[in-house]
Amino acid sequence: MGNFIKTQNSFSNGEVSPEFYATNTVSGVSQLENMDVLQSGALKRRPGLKKIKNVVVGSILVPFEISESEKYLLVIYDSSIDIFQNDTKISTMAAPWRNADLSKLQYVQRFNELFFVHPNYRPRILTKTSSGFNIANFNFYMNPDISINIPFMRFEDTKNISITMSNSNIDNNCAVFTTNADLWDNTWIGVRLLVNDKQWVVESVQDARVATVYTNGNFTIPGTPISDWYEAAFGERRGWPMTISFHQNRLVFGGTLSAPNNVWMSKVGEYNNFDVGTGLEDEAIFTALLSAKHHQICALVSSYALQILTSDGEWAILNSPLTPSNVDVKQHTSIGCKTTKFLPPQQMDGSTVFVSGKDIRELNLDVLNEKYNAVDLCGYSKHLMNNPVSVAYNSNTHQLFVVMEDGYIAVLNRYANTEISAWTRYTTDGDFKYVCVMNDETYVVVKRGNTNYLEKFDVSVLDDSGEYDFSYRISAFPMIVKGHAPKKIRLRKISLRVKDTKTLFVNDYRMEIPNNVYDETSNGFSGDLSMNLLGTQIDTMQPLWSVSSNEQLPATILSVTTEGNYLI
Image (cartoon, rainbow, N blue to C red; front, side, top):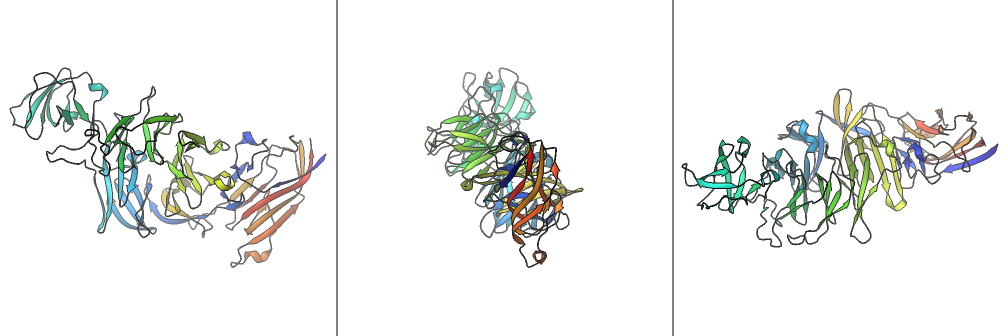
């Protein structure tokens, strides 16, 4: 029989997976629910939730911050957008996307404009003007001859097809394109082609080898078939851009359904001009990710470099300034990110955080600024990662929120300066569905019963949504004494150092706290609390202690000290 005194004054690793329970170097716990890990390593009961308004099932949240006085939260749902300001709905407008489309909707902001892309829809721009909000098609720059500066490319399925031109009897702007193999069908109508340095639009299809096309102005018919012809990279037939960003004053599109590994960059300062021209430094850029694997671009991130996150790896273009003759795109890691749903990468402490399957990865440069590494942020807490469905980072609270398919939020409390990287679990009476950060506040969509609500975390609120209680719980690791797993433990005393605390239960027994702290004007008790004679534990794989409460009162725990006997 031996004696022990153990103090845990840091919870810097948060809730830890069971395989680490015998690791002495981990400062974590076996369960951490509805508690945050502070910069000091202490624990504090999470904020409550304030209800704002009920929302449609399947809604997603998009922040739109124009200035200090103009900050809007967009709730996008089936063919509509509700616009909130100061937590009040001020407007509703029509939108082109249905609920089933929202999982792949991506966006990027430039001043008072939000650019949206989706592989099945023409890009849209939501603009805030002095008179209100407007959503319109993104249009490519039109030249005086009615041609447009859309990117063109040769697709793999047409590389062996040549076109023979002939005059049409319709009018002088029309021609007939006859191919050497079956090609045309009604999906080609309206498609823009680049043939003999001239743009053409397919007007009608006669059969699989003959189509009528039109152009603007005069044209010359060559005497031989044309094998060097191109098709517009974007459109109803080939799909629209999947991803979007701004980088070095260029608008960047990444991937389509037909060309998932291609990247297009606009002319500098002209975001609707994708004409590569003669390759001058400010002209548009086209590049492709060349690899033996199929790389579908999932997201673009403008950071120190242009980061290109794909289904099978992470690429980057480090060149600065970026010009047509100076594009060096390289694969840096081989992790890959989720493709079935867009989970926007987050900027956290100067690095890019993205979801990869069950991992949360941090993409950062090495000390030479030459190569990116993808560090696993949830190595100690894999058990909390269960099919992430939404992600957002709050730089004000230093928290990364990851909503899981099961309806809880895995929250990473991250303070690099004090080496805090702690995961905890947020639960509520209902299921969390979506998370978004705007104006330093964290908003969520919560399903309660059959209704979805827009809510936000609020430090002045102790319960959830004004009517739902929530409890917190911290449970220790199974005990290890001098490197050994004991067979029997007698816990004689447990002491807690607390701050601004009004409620505590230890192993489900209420801890006595001075009565005066329950006065509404009191912040709570700060100091040391203790409890004696907590009994003998034979199943030593169970936590030695648990601290919890289901009362809607504040609690902050700085340290836990246990004293007792053990038998090996």
